[in-house]
Image 1 (cartoon, rainbow, N blue to C red):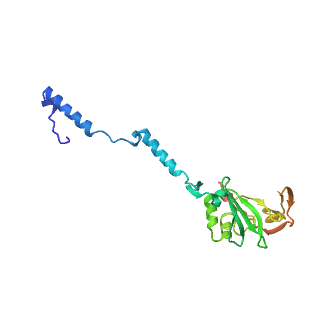
Image 2 (cartoon, rainbow, N blue to C red):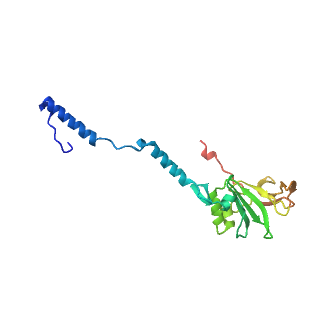
Image 3 (tube, rainbow, N blue to C red):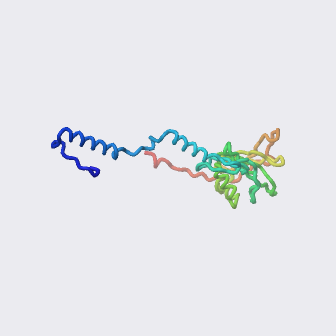
Length: 224
C-alpha cells in the first residue's frame, strides 16, 4: 500500500502490530485527506471575491449601468436612452423619438400631412433594447409597423399607447374598433383631450375606414 508492505495482523507480535498500525495511520493521514470543497474557503476570500464582482458591475465615470432585457449594460450618461431627450431621426413618417427609462415608455412624434412635427404618442412596455434597435433602424416607419402597430390596419397595435401631446392645437382623431350599422368596423373617432390647460376636441368628424368581415367559428365540432 502506497509503496509499503504490511504483514498479516494474525502473524504479528503486539509490538510489531502497534508499529504497523502506526504506519497505516500515518499513510492514511498523509494521502487520504479529501480535497477541500469551495464551501470550506476562508470567509475573507469569499467576501473579497464578491466585492470584486460588485466593483466590476459598477459604472465607470461618465457611464450608467442600464438593466437591459438580457443583463446589464454600461451606457454613456449623455445617451438618449439615459437622458430621455427626444432625438431627431431621418424618416418620412417619424419626426423625433425618445425614451423614459424609469417607466419603460417609448415616445414617438410623427410627421403630419405637411411634413411638420405632428402629434406625440407614448407606447407602454418598450424595453431599452427595443429603443436602441429603433434608434439604429434604417427605416423608422418599417420599425413602427413591425413593433408598435399591426400592419394593414388603422386601429391594430402591438403595444398599448396613448396621445401624449399635440401640435399647433390640433387634436387627432382616435383610431378604434367599433360598431357601425350593426357590424364591426375600424373607425376614426373624434377625441377630446386636456392639453395646455384646456379641453380640446378633434375638429374632424367620425369616419368609417372599413367594415370588417367577421368569420364565425363553429365550436360544436370541438366540444364533446
